[in-house]
Image (cartoon, rainbow, N blue to C red; front, side, top):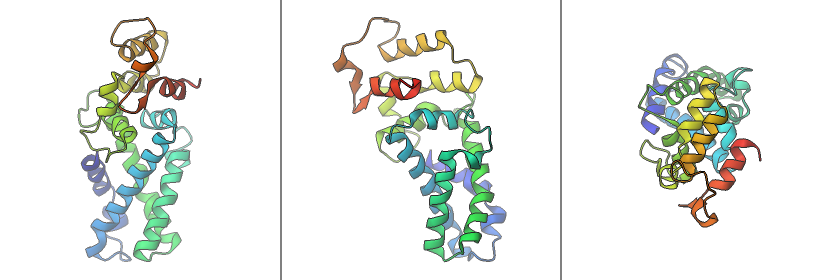
Length: 208
């Protein structure tokens, strides 16, 4: 995930960072890394605080109707990024705000396009959510928290992205939760693996 995100930041930073006279060329990469840290840190904080539904809604593109910068998760990331840039690089609050407003929507929009597209193998819901919930660096190999639990975030994420989250989707999700096709309730001890509380996660996702 980190490499893909940095690529998106680089793609969207030519004017706001590279050609910005207020940022010395020697600091371009460091500013981009600061943005990267704000994005990954903000998403991880939301996921680990229990707002899995909000993160998945954002990544599926379903919670951006009022514009990306108005999404509460993105707004929080933007605020943290502005604060970090002003403190580290001495930019004014207005200059840092303009930089973040110029770069962040393209980066988050590109992330949404990659994650919510089942035809794009570079990132998916499992790799992103697994990394965020696992407490690691959320790189592309950090889906172990999801994989080891038997839970497939992709089934929910792609259904949300397509607007097709109906009862058949939820039944399929239940099958992946409890070992594939077994509709009987799994023992409580088996619903919690690798520190991931599946019952609690279902509650977060479906508002119960």
